[in-house]
Image 1 (tube, rainbow, N blue to C red):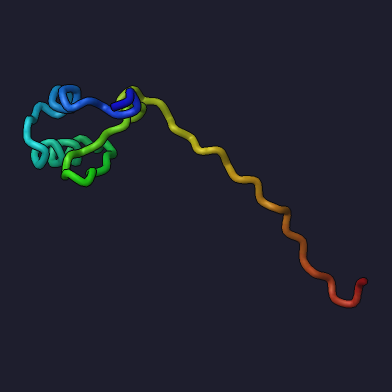
Image 2: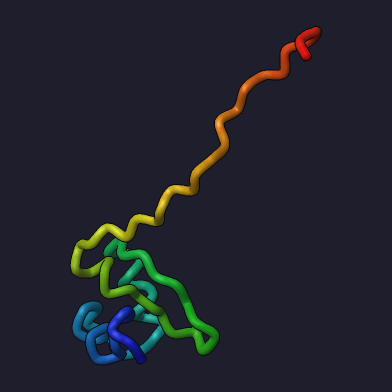
Length: 72
């Protein structure tokens, strides 16, 4: 696994819980955003815990201009 996500041991230390259902409960009570993977385990990004803001690049949008009636 990469360093993008917390490892299982780090998740145990963060939540103080061993079982995945208890980890999920604890993460919810702590307000830490996470996803549940296909095996039912919580997945937390390292950036959330380290306080990094993960900003997505803003897509460039075409500037809108109204169609003027009667002008060619």
